[in-house]
Length: 125
Image (tube, helix red, strand yellow):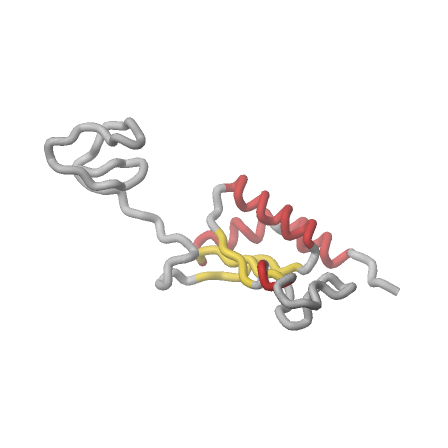
């Protein structure tokens, strides 16, 4: 027996998940692979060094229920130099957002306005 919500496995005599308080089912639901799984094909959908756009991209993807992972996020401020005036740590580059390949089209559509906003920012003098 399996919990359809959390996926916990129970003995055949059990009827309800003790954690989720939902009725158990005979077979476990097929787990959707997440971006952290090693065998999942990932696609880059957004890159930015702007902390405001990074936070907004996180919020938009979370709201849409699209699982994602980031590369270079924590490394931006890890090194003693931090971020340079352009907003990027020269050693790590921009923060990269990765999603499952099958979610890439939807994620890019959701983040389209952010891409445009990033391209329209005036350059520093």
